[in-house]
Figure 1 (cartoon, rainbow, N blue to C red):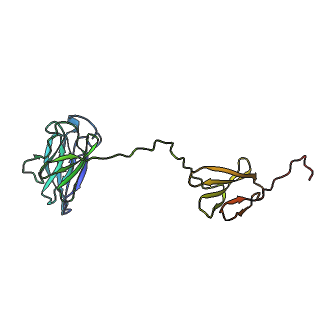
Figure 2 (figure 1 turned 90 degrees about the vertical axis):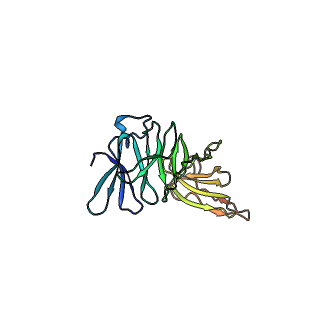
Figure 3 (figure 1 turned 135 degrees about the vertical axis):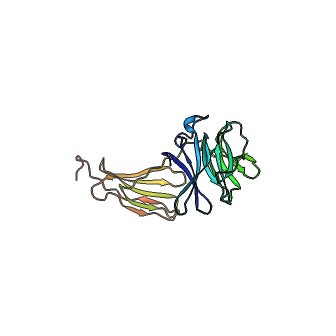
Length: 239
């Protein structure tokens, strides 16, 4: 057992675990080029009865991301033993020879994932998605069309969970009326928001004391209009 063991993968039958040991590539997977501190080993561990450990790939290069073949007899992994990172395959046993699957001469092979039958692998390379036919070694980039942000100003979204005491939708569904409190100025406001354009306008404003706003339904045009607004008369007005 080593201090650093990572990237564990269970065999298809769930009886064996493949994992990476030694090195610090689990924390520095982004490092370009090879370094002795990244060098690691591949091990398999039997999960039946007493755990039994078998080293299948010795140290000497950066080995990472073990994955199983569909029949559970072989292990795929990424290694830079030839200089550039490539996908390799070897028997899941101490004996047997490793075989290089891909033939990349530069770049990285990152975050690979194999299908359950082990026939196809997907990974990242040169900031693109790639697929690999593990039987033939044919690898190709997958075209990805990105959708950019709209050229116009982005809509402003505001979430308010308080200071609203009324809400009504016009019968034609085009206008939303809201009653909002503004405690900092001790006022209440009725707003009309056009749902198609997103524009908003203020209909009435009054003091918060009491209920200064009342609304009533309009005619067949479906508009909700603000009713009478009760205001306190100015001190100079004869009451």
